[in-house]
Amino acid sequence: MTRRTVFLASGLVLLALVPPIAAALGQPFYVDVFRRIMIFAIAAVSLDLILGYGGMVSFGHAAYLGIGAYAVGIPAYYGLHNGYVQWTIAVLASAAIALVIGAISLRTSGVYFIMITLAFTQMLYYLGVSVEEYGGDDGMRLAARSTFAGLVDLRGGTTFYYVVLVLLVLSLGVGHRLINSRFGMVIRGGRSNEARMRAIGFATFRYKLVAFMIAGAMCGLAGALLVNHTEYVTPEFMHWTRSGDIMFMVILGGMGTLGGPVLGAVVLRLLEDLLLPSWTEHWQAILGPFLVLVVLFAKRGLVGLLPERRDG
Amino acid sequence: MADALLEVRRLVKSFGGLIATNRVDLEVLDGETHAIIGPNGAGKTTLIAQFAGDLHPDQGTITFAGRDVTALAAPARSHLGIARSFQITSVFREFTALDNVALAVQAHAGSSFAFWRPARADRALRDPARAMLESVGLGARGDVVAANLAHGEQRQLEIAMALATRPRLLLLDEPVAGMGLDESQQMIRFLGSLKGRHTMVLVEHDMDAVFTLADRISVMLYGRIIATGAPEAIRANEEVRRAYLGDERAL
Ligand SMILES: Nc1ncnc2c1ncn2[C@@H]1O[C@H](COP(=O)(O)OP(=O)(O)O)[C@@H](O)[C@H]1O
Ligand SMILES: [Mg+2]
Image (cartoon, chains in turn brown, yellow):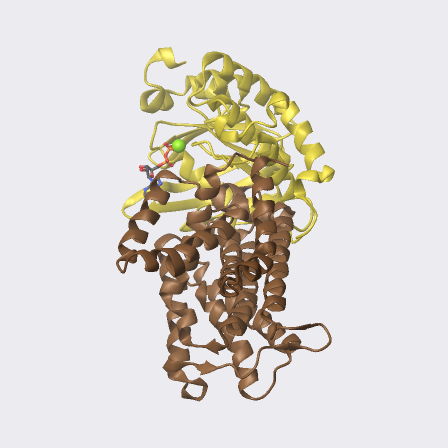
């Protein structure tokens, strides 16, 4: 193992220690903070699969957060709280929508791709705003967290925390297998040199589309977690600034690495939610330049500042 | 006469007002090395791109091994046995040399919808890739990231990738361009060793390479093929001399 791998593994161990430390400090609120961070980390890891490894600059990834959230919220509205059902819907519906969005947007590239993915997510956002039954603009409360009879009880904040942690670790594990598999090599090859890929015989479109669906599904799961975390669902989950947030986590932490998006989620969320707002009300004016500096001077993100390792 | 492996009829391709391929007829015989020469801008690269399926002609047909492939995209043609190198070196710069070739092997080794087993530990991909690197003389350079290879090595790598797809027809767009004397001599020798085993279309400015390797030569000018024939015939062709070769020293 390289030093960077060790560093990232210890980061996960630290995350595992958050609940006892928070309890010892008498600050249970940190369990909430880091649970939310990890949920966004899953979303960021899923985006990095297509953005960092696949070179697909999707500027609409928050769509799947919203789909995952409504896939929990709408059944709950009708009294169905079974988590197995809700989360399965969240994953499948996200994959299905990603199939549709990907099938259209992946025929374009560059700025067009960015704009089309953004446009689709805006459509979903306005759909959420317009459907009054589910609270429209205001959103709606989640009557109860997803239930997993006999397995876990998410009402316990710490239990829920560890569920999220396990899912984050699983996402990283799945991501790791994926990017190093034959499929992953095709995705990375497509980012590196599309013309070369086609010349050696890869019809890249279908691989990209499947990667797009996998990323959507994984982010849909993050959406299901997020609605359980906030116990509220609103179209804001799909707002374009949310897509931008997730993308910044990836870029800040380091595209094309698995640890990067997690680190990016931790740093960005802590800065945005805790540190900067408590120092100054003009925190956004600090955050902006900070991100620009990272992009300019740490081209490979914060992870790039850690000791090198050879591959993802 | 041997059968034509590649048969091109009345091919036309224009970019706006510019006719880059002007009613080209061409036959590449099975097993031959067919050079295409002509000045810059004559339309050689555009022609290769249409053979490979990277560009589609406005008119005309391309038949490969008896099958009309005019409408097929590049990946499908690769699976029929057409491989190419690019005039501007085109490799996976972030990948190691071995990864580059292994990916080309993978493209022709069953489905790539395999999500779990690590590709870099897959001997069905790595072993043939390593053997191919060996055969182009890059055996010792497998672990070097492609971007860090010398220019000549990158060109060799590109040909290794093309060969790794086990093609019947190899399209080479200026394979020795930008190479030093030693490197290009070595490349010419290597391409010579492929003669007979692969049918080749060789676009090249280096007359040394052309006259050493080619069984037949076609001369292109302003999008047209103005002459096709054996090297001696082309060397002696008055029209070719006037139009392209110009001064005697080129020959
Ligand atoms: N994609 C393109 N768009 C417009 N013009 C092009 C394009 N590709 C090539 N051309 C033009 O077509 C002509 C033939 O180019 P090319 O096939 O590259 O010639 P060669 O390889 O013989 O030097 C040139 O005049 C070139 O400028
Ligand atoms: Mg050219």
